[in-house]
Image (cartoon, rainbow, N blue to C red; front, side):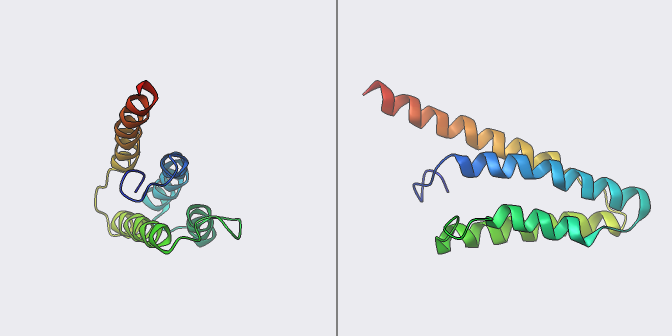
Length: 110
């Protein structure tokens, strides 16, 4: 999204920070076999953007919608008793940070 759609790297940080909320939801689902739906709603709200002009781009909204769907799959998987690894999201976001850092550093050298 950052490279192909030329979007700010802050999007990656937003995804990285969202994993903290996801982890809390998954822990609750694993321990009590239920979830606080308001936490799920707040997580989706955080990802989609609180400000009117934030994420107004249709392509960005579409990507965040897909991320939210993946989070929901993880949550429902835990509720069904499946083992899921929420760290994959965090690792993917971190990897994206490193990949986009290389681009920024090479642009600064020229």
